[in-house]
Length: 135
Image (tube, rainbow, N blue to C red; front, side):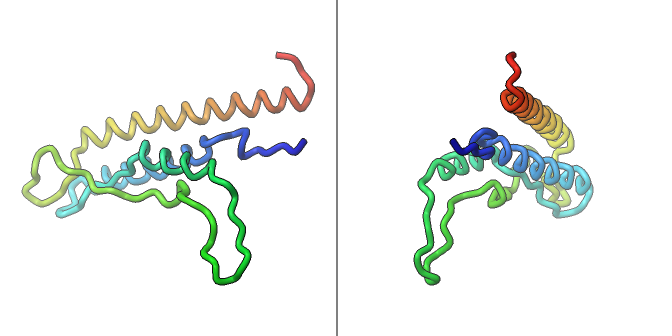
């Protein structure tokens, strides 16, 4: 029987990538909080992972001719950056709300760590299964 590490890890690899990218965007928003006309950006995590989950279970496509399009669906690397709508308009056109960005950053960091902890547990389970240890 063939072992597929991608199936064992599930969607968590993509989740970590999207969380990491989201952290970078939020950090960029905070760094540009005083930049006139800067538009705060974010990624809709649930939407991206929902699209990735729907395409990851699809049947594998095969190119039979060089003229065919590349097979594949949505990946975490295709996550679309969206612009935030400010709760309160700024005089200089900047849409960054520092308190909200800090809150989003903290929540995203906790969720990133949760995904890492889950994957660590998965790796430990796989390691003990390969060694033949009982839990």
